[in-house]
Every structure is written in C-alpha cells, then in structure tokens.
Image 1 (spheres, rainbow, N blue to C red):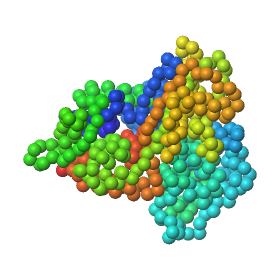
Image 2 (image 1 turned 30 degrees about the vertical axis):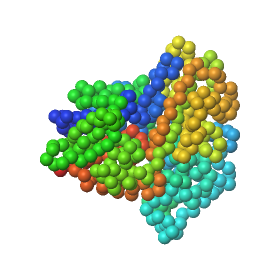
Image 3 (image 1 turned 90 degrees about the vertical axis):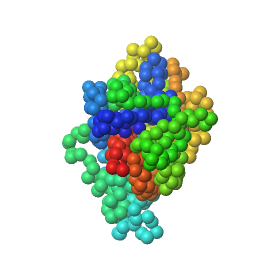
Image 4 (image 1 turned 120 degrees about the vertical axis):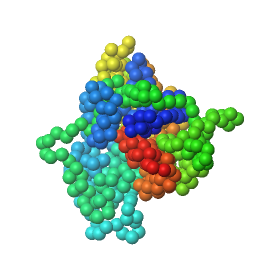
Length: 461
C-alpha cells in the first residue's frame, strides 16, 4: 500500500492520496522490536536482490549508502540428529549435482536423486497439464527424501506451507518447463548456476539498522509529499457511487453507529485475501469469490538475546529444520552472525548479548502457536539445545511476535486463480489490487505488484 502511494506521488504528483491502515502503524509484515536495548526486525529481515524492485526503491528514497549484505550466508539443515551444511548448486533445493546432497541424504537417497526419472512424454491426462505441487513433482523426479529433507524446510521458511500442496507454477516457476515438457530438472538447475569459478552476486541485502528502516523512510517521504496516512482505520465496506454524485468509490470506515465515508476516484486494495474478498464483494463479486479460496498460514518470530558471557558456539547464518524432525521451530537465524550491525549492537549493549531469532508455524498448524509467550520461548530454547548440543541459557530478554494469517498459500492452480481475480478487477474502472497474494510473498514481488496496481488504476475510465 505504501509503495502504491509512492508510485502515485511519482507519476501523478498533484493527486490527493489517502492511505488507510488498519494497524496502529504502517509497514505490514515489516516491523521491529527492541530486545535487550537493540532494535531489530521482527518480521521480514532481508531483501532478495536478484530482483531489482527493492533496490530501486531504496535508491529512490536515498538510502543507497545504508545497504548491507550478510556477513555470512553459511546455513545448515538439521536432519537425523545432526547439522549438515546447506547443499550448494541448488534451485530451491533441487540439485544440479545430486552428489552435493551427501551427507544430508543417505547413499540410497542420493542414488535415487541421481537416477532422475524423466518421463518419456509430457504430463498424463490424469494430471493438470498446467500445474502440479512442488512436492509431487520433485518426489516423482528425485525421490521423496529430497522433498522431506530439503524442499520442505526451504519452502516452509519462505511460505510457511507444505511442499505437497504448494504450486510449482507459483512457487518454483523455473521448473515449470521441465514439468510441462518432460525435461530434466537437474539440467534446469545446472543452467541456473553461475559459470564455474565465477562468484555470484549477493543474493540478499538489508539496511543498516534493519529492513524496517525502509518503512520509516517511505513514510517520511510520503508525508513530505503531502500524502495523508491514517493509521488505526479499518475499511469495512467499499461501494460504487452513482455517476452523477462525483467520485467512483465510497470507502466506509469507523464504528457502525457512526460510520465515516471516504470518496475516491480510484481505489487500490492492498489487504490480505480475506479482507480483500470482503471489501470487493459488492463491486467485484467474481474477484471476491476467487480470493475467498486463498488460505493463509500463521507464524511467530521468537527473538532471543542470550548473554554473551556464556560463549555460545553459533556457526554460520542459521539453520533450517525439516518438519519430519518433529520439532517446534522450523528455522533459526543467528542475527549477530548474519548482520554485522546486529552483532556490533549486541556487543555494546548494557549487558552484552548474542541475538538470534527462530520462526515457528506452518499452514494449518496454528495450534502449535496457541501457547503463551513463555512456553514458545521455552520450546525454542529446548529445540536449540537439542540441535546445537549445548545448553541454551536463560535469555537476557526475549520477544514473541505473532503473525496471524501472515502468509498466503499458493496452492496448485494459484496463478490461474490470480489471473481470474485480476480479470474481474479490471472490469471495474479505477480499481486495482496488490499485495503478497498475487505474484510472490517477498518484498521485491510486493513492490512490483504495487507499481503494476497503480498502472491498472490509472487506466482511462
């Protein structure tokens, strides 16, 4: 929503722009919290830089000098009671060389992946020729162990979903031609690797002080440009106005006994699937029905500040945990190792601390989060003690940020569903939608969706 407003400022500086935010502050899933005196990200904590949109926005906001890259990207996977280095040369876990999967997988599992089962012909009539789940596709080709031990933890970290329900077309489009044409996934993964001996560019970036600095800068720029940003305002209903009353839309906010109606010529809806479905029910009913089918996953981020005097042995940037291991947490980021600014801030805190964070929660597993904060913190410490084989001390400080319904699930057929929603929205002049529902849950994808929504909303009516 903020990026859409910013794009409007750029292309239509004389427009009167209002941003309605239901939460007490702007930023959505980009947020921060102070732990042991250090302000850190409690939502998204990095930007994918292989797509240009986030870096372009950073440049526009004058934050180029604040860009930082991870001090280390050496991650591990916990499997069968031990930590293993993340295999190299993969595309979302699909190997260009199956031998790289040893010792994460057993010898027989590596052999199964090496003996990729490439079909003699494109998908059979019994399967959707356009899409398949990532898990079913990879399991057919390389074996279930690749899915269970590698694909699942990677997809769980990005989408909080399950590989055998996630759309290949939406979540792993690079592999879609291999499915539709019956070509080797190993060949696709191999083609995606940089030339031998050539170091690839950084994959991730952040800002000094955290990704949340992007939101602060964006809010300042918008307010400076005259954009009205109202927080704590929930849009309850959207209606079309009669042509002779002026303004194309009415947005109803405020309490039911005393509603406030805001009129607008154009409207961009950047809310989660359930809220967007509700808001479009009158003005774009077909889009509303399509959005109703998009489920979401809840998750939690547990941030710990552990006393540095205990000399914890944290190696690399963090670790992933496959769901087959049966632990509570699904991933941990060793923030002080990964980001220099976090490590520096922890060192000079009033009580020197090592900062790390763990993520919990997957699609349809909200019950795992229905415990109080103290229990979740204890569960994370227990899991880390088991994984790292060392005692995790009582934290100096800790924080639990719960993200209810945070991540949309890209089920099989998601791209077709999104196309239908957009077609229905396009039938309403001046209306557009954007957000993590449509083209990707990462920050660059959301920025691209917002800019596209502005183009859509500005089309001649």
